[in-house]
Length: 310
RNA sequence: GGUGCCAUAGCUCAGUUGGUAGAGCAACGGACUGAAAAUCCGUGUGUCCCUAGUUCGAUUCUUGGUGGCACCA
Image (cartoon, rainbow, N blue to C red; front, side, top):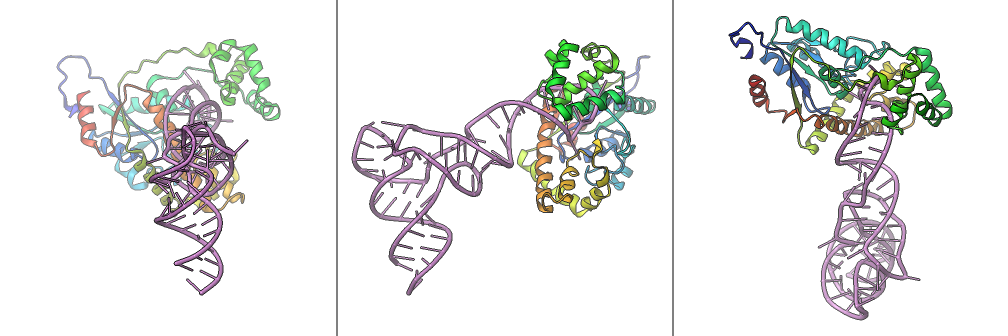
């Protein structure tokens, strides 16, 4: 096993961060646990919804048994009422991994949130926090007037960003403008286009399978969530539906159902469809990174061999 | 058994006065730097049921089938 390799020189063998990604429902949790057991290490979650302790069933968070099978980090560590973002994740995940590397050769990262994985592996630029008033005012203006005026502001305030961002995507425009207004410096000036160096190796493993089979798994899992009490879980957070953490597949559809906009069967159908679309978006993200090694979920032995070769 | 109606995309259907076709939903592809399970962009994927006619040309008209539905027996 890698951890037993003799250190023939004074040079320390570099630690390895094993990153497991893939579409929702593919079996990442199970794979991560097997790898953690195999390499005698712990798991850091990179799932932007499993952080929230109130969201268990609908996010398919690891069960009590799974949590007992291998130590997990960043699962249920915050509340839906807390503010959290990808920069905070980068900080947290780096801190935890460096703690693990004190005593372990490998650490496992598992999750489906591409941006978060990217922040951990390549870093994300250090951009000052936007003050709340600037953000709220801008959002209010957007809701009142639409995006045209704000887009025009961006053109004036930060022509470089204007040339780069997706001008049809309000969130991107709002972000660039709020940073510019809040800091007094153009958003583009914070973008370095540089990867941060990491003091460890990274092995990226992605899981995928035949699309139809994956979709069948997703459908089955949604039915399972319903029988495990998803409707009750969603009802318990209904009053907080405006929170960003609840703008999530499995929750937003049931909120609409509670509002009387459609029946439960339709809500379930929509959860399945939106989960499929989410899975596709994840695949788009992960296939872009050419350094990723792709496997079927049952190819555990091949994956172990690959890691041992690193 | 008889009569009538229908058969076009994965589904529900529109349409072509004869020049090989388009909506909705589903699906597919992509982008992505602090809301990311979010947000945004792009793409019709088709033996127009089969057969034989008429025609320069048939998915469209005609004949005969096949399947479905309805009504009458």
